[in-house]
Image (cartoon, rainbow, N blue to C red; front, side, top):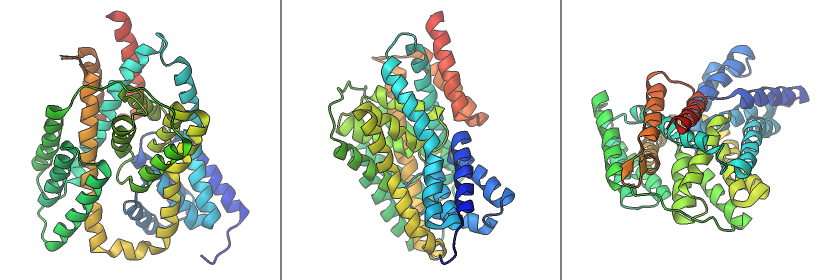
Length: 396
């Protein structure tokens, strides 16, 4: 970009994205809607067509969509300094709030006064994520071939293939298959519903009980490397983060227990801004304040780099049929990944030994109805789950 950007523009960017980062509840779609209202309608920083191009570009690269949209807008309106300012200011409120919750959790999370709230929050979080899987799944399954790609990725995950490899295989093989034929017949809503239900049933049959893991001392470089890898391959919704964290932190490395992971996701639902701020909470649990800083920087850094590289290439990437096919395949693979891991977590949360936890299941069902039928903000669902957990605790 040859044009000069004034200090006033940078201050405008900082002010706007600090505001959006503070009030941005509701997930990526809500964040992007707020950005469109502010930068297109109210301020006129970007044209509507340019803004739509940026939305398309965020789906071509790994990372959290709303954070990358903030970075794109900052770069388009304020150059390199605007890119950094917008991204940091959008992320900062969620990171600070999450860090405070992490400290409170470590200090008081095991006390009896807090336990009822955590008991109700966990099934509500499961409902929030399942609601996202359902909504995104109906959009992602655009064709019969994409339906089979999703089922194939789910099968790979069920036999134990690494999450990242499954996602990349689904994207690459799906892209090649889709480009072999240009004639795609969209499936009916019933077909998409059967696909998601099939994935869900397979997971329920395979799910096993949660194991207790003792968290060990983790070097900061190793923690940073893990989150850097996650930030570099995280396609789709921010909720896909759950899949990578469960596979890497709980199953592979044993740095967290499943309960700690669910608690971290729950705290993330209370905070505005990107879901990836959950990394701040997890970093603090594993390695204190240093871990929180390292994990946060590592998971968000790839988004800044990807946007800086991609922004000038958006017009050409948007027109590529191969890129479009790869994106469709990665998106449906991400839905399969989300469904497998989320339902595994749900099974471990809602089944106590060999019996179903009826109270926790009731909270999950109620929250799921509210999120799918009424599109209630996830923060309110988690808060409602906390209240119900507290009520059940003292009534039963």
